Length: 128
Image (cartoon, rainbow, N blue to C red; front, side, top):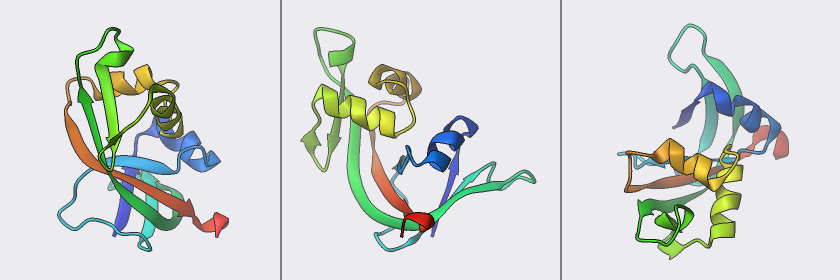
């Protein structure tokens, strides 16, 4: 079932529609397109707040890793479905994921690379 907890800092981005995907570790029972999506802040606490309800539209393999590069920005790479993203695509991905920039997103991932998981996209119920 598409039950996802978000850090409080992502709440305005999920609610505004800017953030319509999430990057997560592979699950034993992965979500599939068509499955329901429920986004929360504070899930499994007394202060749990539902911030989004909708339908999962797409699940893609994502790999975030470090590679030799000339600059700090070149040092990080992202691949979707095995296809490497260009820097402008990485910037767009980071912005859509609720970060100010690709480097801001990479600071979030610092110490957790390489990462292999899923990029899960959803459509809000109100958008249907």
